[in-house]
Length: 285
Image: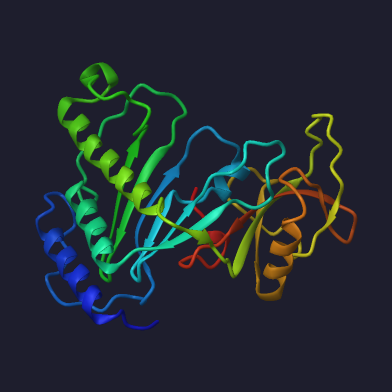
């Protein structure tokens, strides 16, 4: 792994080290100059975890926004409201300058990502949690808040949270807005070099639509268990296999039965891997 570009890396990480010391209950970061793990490594991410969705969709869910040390910003773009939907998600990539990266890191730390105080649990069933992550060379700070957008502001204790917790939640909500705004600039399609395939036995959705089969061009299915239901598994395609799979996916849809050489039909959700991900074990759950 290489060293980060000096100017911004040192500025960002020195600031993070200083903030770690004043974060109250957070684990303090050392107040020394450190060399980050990778020049283009992940530095900030917001994503959903949990929630009432199918295990396959849960395993394949993309982060809301990922920001990398070099200024890359990767997010999921809009998808046409059609059924069945496309086989591939609309993953977009943009670029921000180093001052904008620094600003987002500043916002994240000021919003309390390094803190550990209780954020309350609103009386909302089956909502996802919103997980914020800030990565430095020496520490990873993770802050998770349940039902961040599902509780109306101003409800206080009536909404299951105290006024203090509501104020802390508002800071994280504002951070999420800042991150999505950063991803909303001019973007182009993200070019993945690897893709995870979340597979389960194909079941007829009984929606009256005829779905032509497609020959499976990827690694052998079913792959490794995802940790959820026994019939949900994952494989990772890289190199030529990844390019063949991504190419084939452009001419099918999310309900297409993929057929392996032995004639078995599979339902597959394709999840392009992001720059800091190398395989199924890196997927969020």
